[in-house]
Length: 469
Ligand SMILES: Cc1cc2nc3c(=O)[nH]c(=O)nc-3n(C[C@H](O)[C@H](O)[C@H](O)COP(=O)(O)OP(=O)(O)OC[C@H]3O[C@@H](n4cnc5c(N)ncnc54)[C@H](O)[C@@H]3O)c2cc1C
Ligand SMILES: Cc1cnn(-c2ccc(OCc3ccccc3)c(C(=O)O)c2)c1-c1ccc(Cl)c(F)c1
Image (cartoon, rainbow, N blue to C red; front, side, top):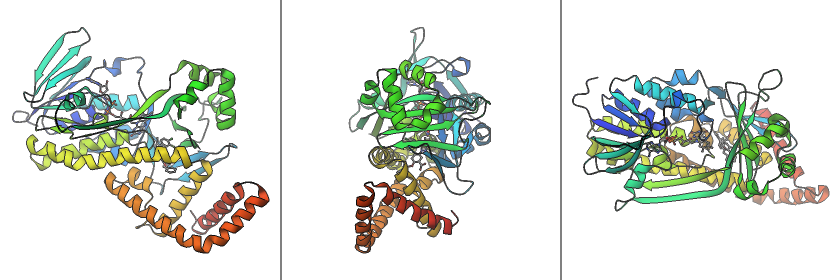
């Protein structure tokens, strides 16, 4: 593609979204210079960072497809066709995501980032400047200033400055100086820590492979995603104050024996102790801002524009989908940035903020209401209703992870579904008054809630059996 009449773009940030956007722009014939603060991760022994693996779903896969990378990335991904719910007594229950072609993929973050950088670099019009950190920019002049690892500064002038520099974006900080720029951020009281479930003594996966393993314990949650080396990257989410309160090995073991007894053997007690006391629980922040653009001169994408808590596994998928949408706007307005960028904000802001809200909603929902029994029940009811009314009842997670339904439309459908459920519950409450009295009787007789759940779950299982779910 000729680059003579095309734009010269600086992409700040060579992470997942910046490298992906560089591919889309190079495909359009743009001259693209990526400025990445870190050194080339492809040359590094160890890459420190956030999650080691990530769940890739439909939106991210479609972005990869758009630059011809889906097959290459998918062949190194591990499909997860169901959640595997671990309950307190160590029982594991699978709940399929849907049909056999509805699966999310566990992808190695470093592998994905390296593949995207290498793909971008293959375009003759792309250059990557590693160890170059964005310091400031002048939106009017289209100028940006970087410093390299020797402390030298570099000033450039381009047609477009794209900020793909993550949740703590320097480019967004520059935008925050401008009038009419809205910004909000929320740190949640939970932190996360990554643990590791190694292969078993036969060098096989220690748990069922093609599953997203979830230990829902209300305010404590843990998940595990499989890796190609037959380990599972396991993420423990819990309040910082609980992390800080576990300051001895005895307290750590007591905590796991009470909350995640089946995980002790999988993690290995000694390895668990070693990792727990040599790692730091990391923060999670939700960031929303508007607009994403400055005139026809600059735009922010990915976590720089919308950072979300990771309780829906959509942050990267959303950022990669940003690249599809921005590319569509450039196509629609024939690369007229003064038109394409404002339209990008108009199109993308409602969806990205909806996903931030949904991720936060899910965090609050799971933290307060969701233990393994309720997780199972809700997902089974979802699957039964979808089986019965496939076109009207699409589980929210299905819409988010397995379709490109605009995120804000997923939310409006959820509200409609909640209304239906609540009306259903209201109606059945009239008839179900008897059920309540029966439930209270069961409670009284058994002294516990579980018979009611078991009764509910048995009924749901029976319906599932009839529907061959
Ligand atoms: C625990 C956890 C689990 C997650 N799990 C999932 C998941 O399962 N699925 C999912 O879709 N998402 C997940 N996410 C979210 C996902 O990690 C992010 O949404 C994604 O990494 C955003 O990509 P990005 O390129 O916008 O930002 P980043 O990945 O943060 O990349 C930003 C890049 O910019 C560079 N940079 C920063 N500042 C500068 C500067 N001043 N100048 C130049 N370069 C700079 C950085 O070095 C980095 O390379 C998870 C996040 C966390 C924390
Ligand atoms: C990494 C990743 C990829 N997808 N998901 C995910 C998220 C939410 C889900 O359900 C919402 C819900 C469950 C139960 C009740 C209400 C809503 C489901 C599901 O349905 O399987 C899967 C995660 C994830 C990330 C962090 C935690 Cl803590 C977690 F549990 C899972």
